Length: 80
Image (cartoon, rainbow, N blue to C red; front, side, top):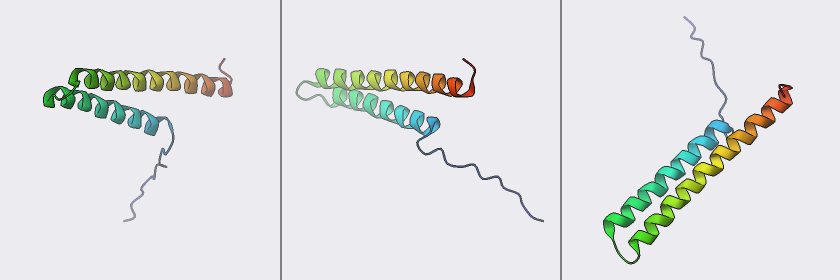
């Protein structure tokens, strides 16, 4: 019996991989913030604050990129 497998092309550089990369980066920066507070050290609060700010910047940029991508796709499809 032959098995039929549909191979889905990889989404390298596509919206799904960009979203996954953005979420991974946000998770990393948030972990960095917690680690800075947990371990203490010089200016731990400042380092944690900077890491959280970086996570917010990444999220904001990813949202903006998704919006622009969607608008461009709709324009190319003729929905606008």
